[in-house]
Amino acid sequence: MDARRYPARQLAALYCERWEVESVFTEIKTHQRGARVVLSSKTPDGIRQQIWAHLLVHHALRELMLRTAATRGLDPDRVSFTETLSSARRGVTVTPGSFSP
Image (cartoon, rainbow, N blue to C red; front, side, top):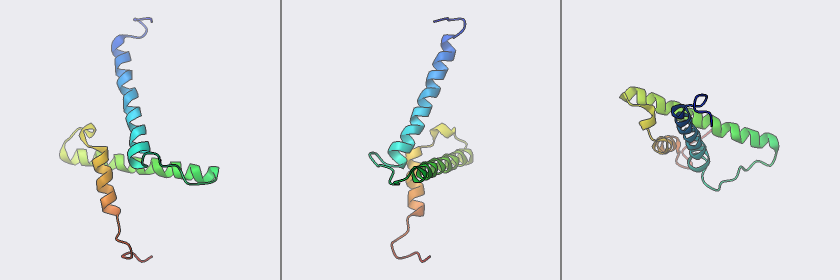
């Protein structure tokens, strides 16, 4: 409540930052992992491994978005996460039976 200690402009900027974090949570939980999808591991170590995998994939997608934005001279906030995710999924999809280990 102290306007000198906590100026309104700084508080407003922090509020915007908060929503950026919420957007990241939505990207991972709803779009990347899928709504209502439950982690499938049965052990704490397995759950941790799955969480780290989701975070690493998200980081890689965000890095791809940064590089795309830089190449095109765009603000990275203008690159769509869902379009990047769809593009990455198309790029790694393999026709069943066409890949031999």
